Image (cartoon, rainbow, N blue to C red; front, side):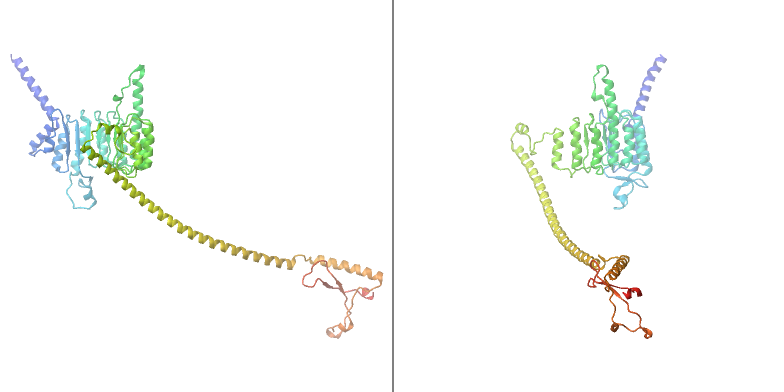
Length: 509
């Protein structure tokens, strides 16, 4: 009897111990126990979130104190019950020297405020979240929104994330992880096949961050192809729903992504068959990015939604073309379709809605018309400026042509002067040696003629024309031979006189 009583008493004791252990690992029970032990009033945001058949934590902690965060950290450290954890901040915070401070106060534009969480508590919170992701086997949705998770903090969180196999949604919106943090995060989540949703809204991403996300899509695409090939062996059916991987991407409010960041995504998505939705609102896109997206949608028919709102540089025509590619039921004039108008009853409320819709269209068309008019005015002003510039250029061209003609005339005059001087000076004049040779030859010929004809060929000076020499002595007369040179001999009238001293023998003749 005693043994039976001991066994019956032992069973309730074992059940109570297991129940106490489970309660100790349940977040809400442990949080209430910590509040009672430390004599703190529990936060109503945490107490009210517990519902029947659902255990989650979703709070905004802008008004929490440091001790409230400490209690949440201690309650999360050994939790195994929560399947949805969301810790959000409405404002944007940065990690200062003392802890988390608002971004405006950190820049010095406002009054100094005490930190929301001190540095030690924030470090413990991040380490606890990493431990929670590592040990909790039922968590599916994990959200950390507004916390500055850059550098070491993100690496600490990734260590716990890499060992989690149950997570399906990861939300790090407004956490300012940057491109480097995005690369480190994507290097780990590409090995998480159950993760379907990745939210990196307003995380200060650029083209490099989009490249890291595109690498994840490319890697998982190859893994899915390999898995589908294995399932297709021996005529097996491919179950696409069980091919896990990223399906939904939220990259909105990252204006530094631009056209080429979207190009990195569309190049990978052209031959992908699993990604369903991509959100790139307010990402600095233009019509060039819309063209990239149109080319992607021409090849990929599995994308259900591609949100490009709040990109003011994308024209309405490009948006209309993208909506058509996505299969939206849109008419050319933007009004309701004929089938919808037939199905909807023509009541006063429906007519009012239609009038409001038409008024919105009219306002948009008026805005477009005003924009076009302003552009036309700008073009007219530019045309006037171009006309003034053309007139000035034509005047300058005329002045240049006139100066060129004057220079050419001066050049011609100078060439004429130089040619005349050269012709008058030395155009046909012979050299000195040639002239002497011709003179000697003609003198010999005259001497020979004189000997035969007994006539004189030498002209002597008259004794009346003789000039007295120095010393009063008279020299014998000198004969001159007069000859006419062949050709023009310059200003000397065409005659060239050469004095020649005659021998005494020649004087006798």
